[in-house]
Image (cartoon, rainbow, N blue to C red):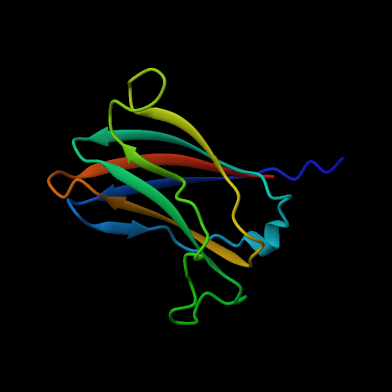
Amino acid sequence: MNERLTSKALTFTVGAGATVKSDPIAIGALQPLGMFSLQVVVTGDGTAKIEYELSNYETTAVAGSFVTPSDADDIATGLTKTSGSGGDGKDFLSFSPKVCQNMKIKVTETGEANPVVVTAMLVTQ
């Protein structure tokens, strides 16, 4: 059984109507088995949408190399400080990106009136 498990802490402070992206995450080097989860805590008065972008370039210096696949589903939409099963902004999300070399997590504030902060722990296996 392959036990490769890797985690990465991420924090996004996103202004009203803005988008913030993570630094590149070297997925190819991790050789994940295709299982991804994101545990999130949402604070602030905004509304968050979480997506991912992928790149097959081994170097992250190639301009414009990160794209959202045309058939990709959003990781989550409509997240607020009252989201989640406890109504406290905490949630646990899973997603399945395509095989790639690098990935970025992208958070957009979609309410366009208030900022939002998303603190997350990404785990891959």
